[in-house]
Every structure is written in structure tokens, then in C-alpha cells.
Length: 324
Image (cartoon, rainbow, N blue to C red; front, top):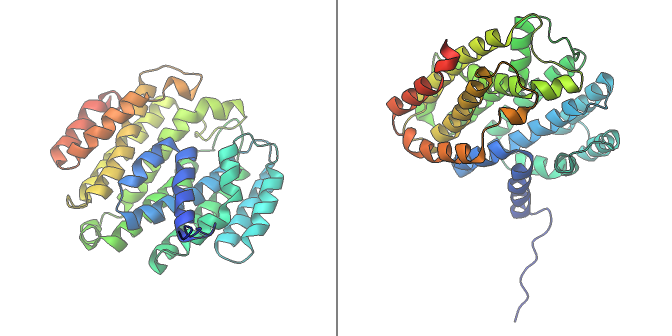
């Protein structure tokens, strides 16, 4: 009997299997939402998330100086743009992060060549969109590495800029990819492009508020100085309103795209409401949604995305605390 053919370690099948596995290890939320997308979009969105996660890992490394973070971010961007060998980035980054405590994120960095191989199998239009996103994020984060301090960002404008370079640009990327794959969505979006930025910023503001105790413990704050939590929640609520408008632009026949966005949106709404109902909290675990809540909402989204009225009702009922 003929022996089964061995799949080479760098085969497209093995690469995509790695992408799915590591996505599940580095993000519970996105491992849940990204598979809802149509397969061609799932591949590029999952790939982009992993590239952004590498940038985030460099930012999160408390033991690195701002100068080292800036150098690694620049080297990573050069690797993505094929200006330097990706192995050069991997070696430098792993050496700098030798004391980093998250093995899954270190594994992701070690497999940066795999992630980039997948990117190069995407369409040229999608590759251009990803390169733009990673460029803005890497360069933007390099700028903000020098701004890290315990007091916070200097004002609301700087806070908005930070939220744009780390997440608003991802909203733009999703919009470009969705438009590349759906002419109906592209047509609906005309004149409403800025809503994509608000969608990304709303999710990022949720993360900033949720993670603020852990950031404070490592001597960092991404909140603007002299702005209260109540004021920030009010701004986040406005971003969520725009986010819902964005989701409602996605045609009903694009169920996967709608559900992907609505699931991330709804989890943000419920998390911000938990934060708003507390005067203070000392760990993100205190405002983290339970697994049962997440899975119940996951099931609800399958029905909700078929009805604009149902999605609006969810937002109204679950954001009343934020609307005050």
C-alpha cells in the first residue's frame, strides 16, 4: 500500500492550519468572530489580525525601552514590505523579548515567515490594503512608544489619534477588504467612509478602559489627561452609535460580514456597560464577560443580523447606562 504523501511544513495547507491554531491561542474574541467571514475574507482578515498582534506584542513588552520598541516596529514594517529579510526581524525580536512571559505570542513572532507567506497568497488589492494598515499602525505606534507614561496622553485629540493608528485604521482596512469582495457594500458605503474609523475606535476605547488597571500597574496610561471615565464612556457611546450605523450599511445578504462586525460590536457594548456600572475596578477580569454570556450573544447574532430592528433594539436595551 502506498504511503500517504507528507505535507511540507511550508505548504499552503500547513500555513493556514497554523494561522487558525495560533489565532485561537492569542485571541479568544477574534478566534470566535473571524471564522464567521466568507473564506476568502476570513483568510486575509485573520492574517491581518496576526500581523497587528505582532505589533501589539512589541508595544506590550514592559521590559523594552521606547527606543527598542521603535527599532523593532520599524524592522517589522520593513519585513512586511519586503525591504529586509523576515528572519532578520524574527531573530532581533526574539532576542529582545527573551524575558517575555507569553509563549503563544513568542510563537507567533517566531512564525512571522508563515504569516507573511499567507499574506502573499492574497489578492494584490487585499495585500495593498494590509500593507497600508500595517504601515500606519507600525509608524503610529512607534510615535506613541515615546509617549508612554503613567499620566496619560496629553489631550483628547492625541487620544483620538492613538485610537486611529491602533484600531481606526483596522476599520478602514476591513472596509476596503469588504468592498473588494462585495460591490453591494461598496455602493452602500459611499459618503459614509468615516463610520469605519469610528467602528475601530469604539473597539479600541473598550480595550483601553478594560485594560487600564493592568496598564497602570506597568506604568502606562492610554487615557487622555484630565478626562474622567464618565467623559470617556460618553465618547465611546457616540462611537458605538456610529458603529451601528456602519454595520447597518452591510447588505443583509452579506450575513458573514454583518455577523462578524455585530458580534465584536455587541461584546464591546456589554463590556462598556459593565465598566459604566462600576465606580472603579482593579483588574480587567472584574469587567470581563463570562464565557456563557459570550456564547449566548454569539447564538443571538445569527438571528439578529437578519433584522435591522433587532440589532437596534439590542443596542438600545444594552446601552442605556452609557446613554445617561
